[in-house]
Structures are given as structure tokens and as C-alpha cells.
Amino acid sequence: MRRLKNYSKSVGYYFTDDFQEPTATRIFHKVLVVYTLLRMTLVWPLSRMVMSYHSISLPKSLPGKLLLGGAFLANQHVDVFFGIGVLLLVVILFTNVNYIGNLVFFYLTFNLYVINLPIADGSDVVLFMLSLWCIPIATLPVISNERGKVIQKVLYNLALLFCQIQVAYIYFISGLDKLMSDTWRSGVAFDYIRHLEVLYNPVLPPIFASEFWNIIFSWSTILFELSFVFLVWNRSIRLPMLLIGCIFHLFIWIVLSLPDFALIMITSYLVFLKDSDYDRIKSWVKRRLPSR
Image (cartoon, rainbow, N blue to C red; front, top):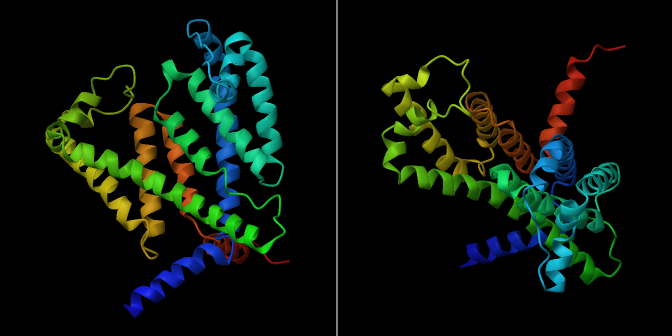
């Protein structure tokens, strides 16, 4: 009973004491904005084409109209929406993280998803879900009264945790779904990949023609996704797990030509890094720089 009380106190202290991992969280937020800026810029011409076939109607409710106002604007004037969106993202990138900027960031990512719904993939869903959890991850404006400060810290730290849980949940659901699928357990899924002419990289050797390698790749994918959920929280295994994840998504990028999903998942790994990790990187760089 005493151990449970001590644990409860430590958890409460963690969420209320201070903003956790401020440097690492700020870097994660800024890189997520950079990813969105690049994606929005690159998808702009394609979205112009989509808008010529994909009509968006405003809902009747006022909240719905406000939420989908950006998508409706793009339906009427696609270049205006993207021009304003790119400009706002640049402003968000070069200003301190604040609640207004975070709300605008979520608004843009959600409407971007709605605009490109006919061609949207998993990366769009991951992006706007992470941007949703990022809304409370801000320290500005500063709240003056003590109770408000505590609430601000709790919301910040909970949102950071929810971002991490969101990423882990993606792997858990994906791994569980594959584990329940006979197609994945038998390795046939990777054989199907070889026949996806639109996605499969034709310059690769016919590695998926081997039943042995199909089974190895299938079970490696299943084990990685399911183990990620548990091992990423372990302090000693966290960084190696994230490194393996980067290799995993780069492999998907090369095989299936899906750079957007690979990049958003690798970007999401930054939410698991600590300030101490960046301190170690700085020390490592300093040791290798030539001394004057």
C-alpha cells in the first residue's frame, strides 16, 4: 500500500512539477511543422487537381463550418488556401511555441487531410492526430496564478504523453492486425507486395520471390511492431528501438516508394527523445570538433 502511494505521488509530481523535456519537445514540434510545410508545398499541385473532382460542402452547424472552413476555401480557391497555409506554417516555425500557433497548426493539418481525402494515406491521419495532441504543448502565454500554472503544466505533460501513446498505439494495432492475419503469418503478404506494380520499386532484386525471406520479413515486421509498444519505454532499449524503427521505415520507403509515411513516422520518434539525449549529442559533436 505504501509503495502504491509513493508511486502515485511520483506520478503526480511528474505531471505537476515542471514542463517535461522542454528542449526535446520543442524540437519535435518544430520538425513536425517542417514536415507539414514540405508536404503542403509538394502536394499543392496535386491538390489543385483533386479539387477539380472532389467537391466539399460546408456542414450546417456553426462548429462544423468553422472546422472545415479551410477545406471549403480550398474548394473555391485552392491556391489561396495553400498560399495562406504555407505562410502561416513559416510564421509558426519561426515563432515561439504558443497555443494560438498550435491551434492554427492543427486546423491546417486537419483541413489538408479533408482536401486530399480521395488520395490520403496513413501519413495524413498520423499528422493531424499528432497536431491535435500538440495543441496543449505550449508554455505561452504564461499563466500568472499558481493554479493556472499547475493546470498548464499538467495539460502540457499529458499531451506529450498522449503523443507518445498515439505512436505506440499505431504500432500495436498494426502488429495485432498482422498477427491475426494468416496472410501475414504465412509470409504471403510480402509476396503480394511484389505484385503491386504501382507501389513496388522495380529496381529491387526479386527478394520477395523467396518463401523463406517472405516469412522472415513478415515475422520481423510483426515482432517489431508489437515489441515497440513495450520496449520504447525502456530507458536502456529506447534509442536502439528507435534506430531499428528508422531502418524499418526506410526499408518501407525503398520497397513501396512511400516516403511520406516513412518521414512522418521517423519524425514522430522525436517525441520519445529526452533533453539528455540532445545534451549527449552536443557533447559528442564538441568532442569531435577540432580545437582552436
